[in-house]
Length: 201
Image 1 (cartoon, rainbow, N blue to C red):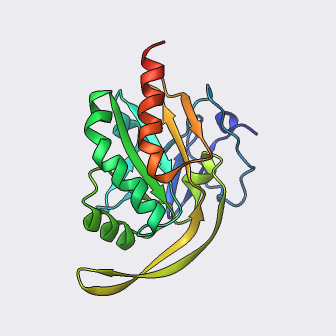
Image 2 (image 1 turned 90 degrees about the vertical axis):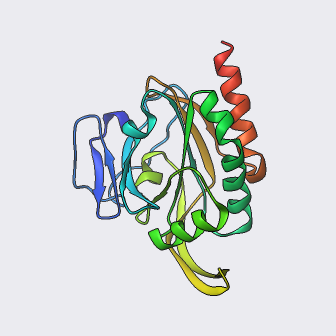
């Protein structure tokens, strides 16, 4: 069943708004989703690294929206990916695009990840994998890693591990770019190139 025909999914860890309103079906009960370029993107919200609710409609606010899913905060590939989006954010904003990162990490992880790397865009906690499922992003079991932050070792627990996929949502709310074979360090450059191609059409 396509997401555009689905009602939505709601859990304590995340909220996906369907096109017909809210529902209380869990992520595990919903059928698999396969979003393609040209499909309407899910409208979603979740808790951000600052502990506040972030909503995709408000976050997009007439812009393009880059939604990238990554496996785990404070790991090598995910740090390289996030830092490149950080460094390219001014270019993205100049091109009319906002960025949001989504993972199965808990809020505490995201705060540490954002602070340690001076990230300048929101990170969403999708501990139940609800947002990932709405986009058709595969998830697997979570895990715990240890990292040193400000001279102190901390444990970072994620409840699910999302595959590394990237989407761009157009101003009309449709998917205009989808990448499932993401190069972490090159992701932001691939997104910039995709936006340039879209703007030249």
